[in-house]
Image 1 (cartoon, rainbow, N blue to C red):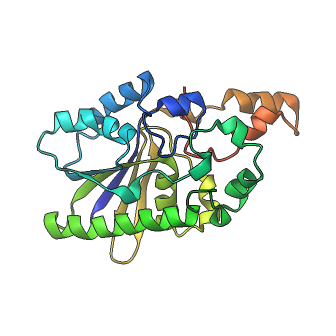
Image 2: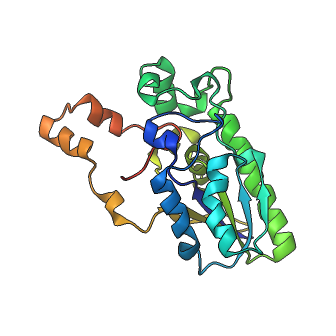
Length: 243
């Protein structure tokens, strides 16, 4: 079966603004995100992509624009099921504000029980995304052969949920995964099992260095600061990545 290249969209204005975008219209790439998207064609140059599949949201389409310009014959498809989680009443709100909501503890510690008010559950988000991947695997294999490679451009929580499924991880463990903006995750699907080949690969090892909040936590002792403790949480929506 095909190899799936999962790309999280480049850094967005919502990421740097600390806002949970969801399906809020008008969210675009920021300056850094535009640079990340511009570098994508060279990063993916060795891969003979058979197709590109995108979330319908603008930040994903913007991320793929340079790649499509470099590969004008690469077919592009839009797939609603890999669109961002429907966060409902949480959409467009500041993450700092949402951190005080009791539901955030559920999102962090028991995400399989999390249902966003006026939106969908994280279980439903994972189910639709995994269904989309499985169906696209079959389509790409049917049209391009079992050794084909194709790309999906989606969102942080979606990518993490698909990876969790590929690894056989319960959804309650998916917050242990991290995928930065414009990172590349690769999964090779076979008849017996998927293989995770890359996870959140940005080609930039600076992301492995301790964040300032982590260093502050060490200085403050075992208890740490509120900022440091927040840095350990799985950022809803995926976060802004390394500056």
